[in-house]
Length: 319
Length: 293
Figure 1 (tube, one colour):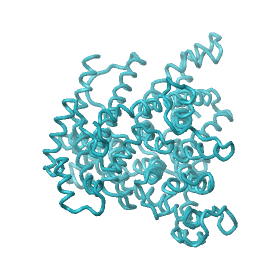
Figure 2 (cartoon, chains in turn blue, yellow):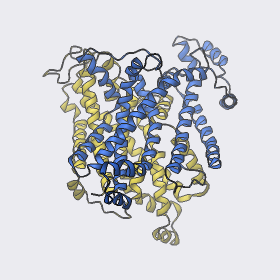
Figure 3 (cartoon, chains in turn red, yellow):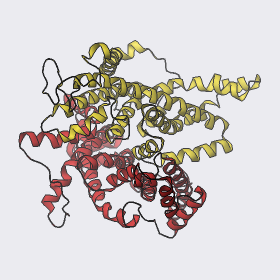
């Protein structure tokens, strides 16, 4: 097991190096480079060159890359160009915000997805199933940034209520904190639970048709017990896969939702640094996103082995 | 994407596509296609349907929906209805072309990688893995920012980013397909690699490519709208639904909710059409995905 994990983590290194090279090149071919953007349209070329020299942007790309890589390997993620601080401390400041949003969202996704999927599966071939299927397709079709806008818009028209737009840490005032994070988490969570519910339903229907469920039913167990105790556990395998991928996708989703709800998380940091051409921050953010994604895939595989003893973890690569 | 993979694994070897039977049996598919066709017609006939051009500022600003302006007007006096109608061109146009680019590119990568195997396959798959390691939207964001936001660039970037996802599935099919007797027969008759690739293998993945395209369409339209919403997609004066939902629509929504409501409705309807189509296609390809019927 340990050997397997180490092997998988080692396989990550070339991927992450690839990711960092791709991002490094992309970031530096962006039109409107950082120095020009910083000095504005009236800057004299000499000024631009001087600023580029100051930040080391005039050196060969390869040299810049290895400089950066050298820093990252030693734990120095560099300094932000537009903020007077290191990328690492900026990242650490924003992490709790996106972290809480993600945790709440995944909670909502799990609860809603499992509940809706199970209800649909139990009511197979009844109207409830059809209705839930329609709801889930609809839920997947409505863009989160639109639902988010409506979630802010409608209460403010009808009840003149506005969600709080300043950050309150959870442990200071849990209620205000949830008023801030609840709506975005519900919007994102509902959207992703629609996809999850369909997977849960399919998996549960597959399990409910198997022999051991017939045995459980024929020994007189109530349907509720059959579903909850016997079927749900075995239906979790495909669910884990989708949930893991969903978490990775949510990283993209938070960019949009943080923008709409004015949450100062990592998603917003990403957007701000892309607009300002803040190279060191974009660089690290992209790497961070890739690390989370790939590690998530590893977790999925480990969860498989844990949930289903028949799964043996061998070999190296998996897409 | 994982769903698509699951769906395709259950694909029978040779399934005849009788479109009529499929559509008659599948209410959702029919609904989805109807929605898409109607929106397609709206997009084609946009100048005839819309009372004014998408950029024409010929009305008072921020007017409520009325008979002359059914969806109201925006901050600079453009008719929102006209913009929404013209927006169908942007949304569907980008959606379809990006999907075609993605599926063609993906098929090409997949076929070449799967057919040649060895070091070609190894190199291509490592590259694909690098792309797959990014969350989609974040990758799109960085690339669009790098190449500059314009309609053509958005199409290209979404298409190119989709290709690696598609290639994985195509490659898996090709790996099985290339062992079949007809490929061996072609080779023993002296057919060149290029001939086998383009005349035999590529056509054999076309049905699959169609399936992939229909399943991906909704996501692609959503991606365009999301990028434009963030200000990194279709640039401002163009009538993109995603872009129209951000900016002024969110600043003035309390006074002018129609700015936020109508483009969002149009966008959701379009994606709903695409998703219904995808759902029907999945039902046909993989009857067990939703339990035994």
